[in-house]
Length: 191
Image (cartoon, rainbow, N blue to C red):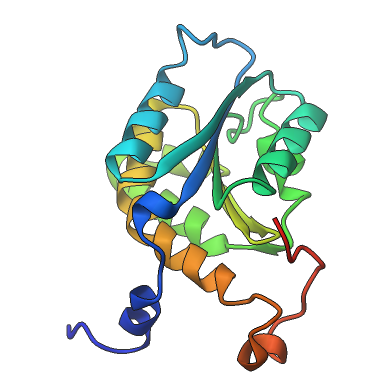
């Protein structure tokens, strides 16, 4: 496969990893800062990828508080990564809480995550409701809480593609006349 074309052209316009500010959120009823292994793995992987951790939050799985925290971080960061609450248990409500904020979903993230996860853990991967979407000009990822799932999502999907995704969102700025007729905007122009 050759490495020229539209994707490479877009990636050439992407910001550098260190310029990307990422907010981290752990949704858990049981974890404390001392026992938040998934959150620790997430922070380490995000830093290893070269991104800047702009904020780190540990919250109970309460939909309103989770939605508010993600909305606030989306206004201050280039990306928000939420870990926890994506299973099918009665308290797993992250996709409903945060998905309500999404102006555009990125279904490919969940599809690819489950495909990769299936290769590691088999059919239990279908029970994951990992998801992603765009809030204003911020991309938001919803990951399972397990350290192995966090590792898979960040290493294989988020780290390699985040700068490109952020670059695409930044290109939608209102002053770009070439994009005006392609995208309906939702009024989240400034941060």
